[in-house]
Length: 172
Image (cartoon, rainbow, N blue to C red):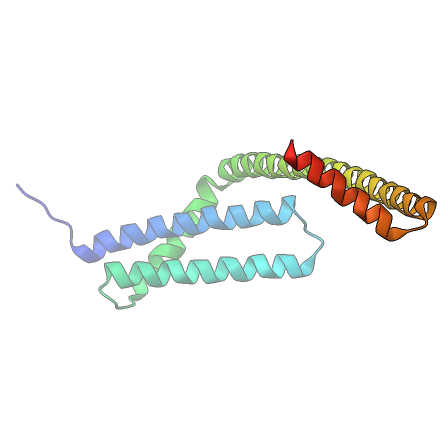
């Protein structure tokens, strides 16, 4: 005999699954609060607002697609039931696993940022030494040119010699 399940029942069970997603996202939120900072009240407030907004958007999107643009109370009850089931059953091992995973991700990000900072400092020191050497060479070149001009006492003769040298070089 063929047995069917009514669409509202299927939607209710999917709403329970939505509640599980709420729980996982709440644990991600808690891990971020614990790992990054728990003393900064503004950051904690921002994370709570982000969680609330995302949970609302998920619920409204779920209702839009599964209840054909209508909001049903059983969707909210199912999601809350799913959140409570998640929290009472698998919350502790999931929180522990998320704590380890997010902690590793944060450590990797910090290592990458420290490596990038070291590279930036090396590039900065190399560019500073190059510009310093270039500045010294330009300064020496200007002094040499000024000394040559002062030795000759006549700027026109000096310029003529330079022009003649240039012409001789280009003819060869």
